[in-house]
Image 1 (spheres, rainbow, N blue to C red):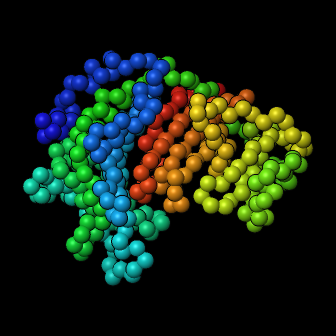
Image 2 (image 1 turned 60 degrees about the vertical axis):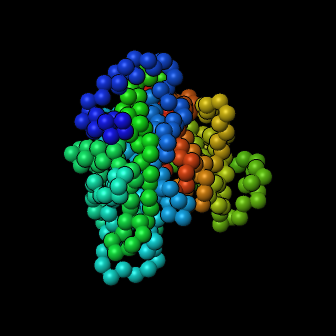
Length: 336
């Protein structure tokens, strides 16, 4: 059965996709939490994007494989593993290979990749060419396990079980629709960031501000609208840094801080950043000191308040960068 599903998935012949879409309830966001099939998870964001992923089978050799499909249908396979050669000089450029083996241990598909990620700690690569992605998916759906092997090393850098991969890939493929009842956020137009105030307004410091060493305290400003400047004060200690937000006019007089719309049960006050180009307020709560797991939240400025726009989450701390964490929710954004 697994082999049959895998072949149908790779060839795009499985007919359950349209049936599953018809059964979705509008307004549910398609998938607010990841679903699990054996060792593989899957999640969709309600705007046409989905992810399916499997993690390394041993904490001593972390790694992952993730397939992300965007709202435009573009598919990307990303893989990573801890580099056991980290910190050691190499005589030649590092190469590693993804091998997918069957139940008998035979390699049914393989592909070499060069190098590490920018941290020089993790092996990392992407596959984006449609034909290559198709071949890899077909192998992932019918194989027993995937191995990331550094050339010249006897033991794999990581092993990812493919138990549940076919079902997870099929689930994501059949749930990649758009939630018609998802909120629409009308994003405020960009404004000039020229001549921002140079000194922060005066406000009563919080307990964390008062206790923050001067060399760890940062304050950044961004203009939300003419006469409205957002200030973000952060104490950069550890990997989850407390932040506070204040709003002031151009002369530094404090205004009422804009509301930040959050889903029920979510309390966010750490690692705030704001990008004036996209008008996106971001906050990420990391699960470890390597920033490879946690929750990432985003809000969009609509001219009055920050509207909750997306959430991405990764529970397993096995090297996956924040940009690859599966999105479980995404609102539709239109520019005014």
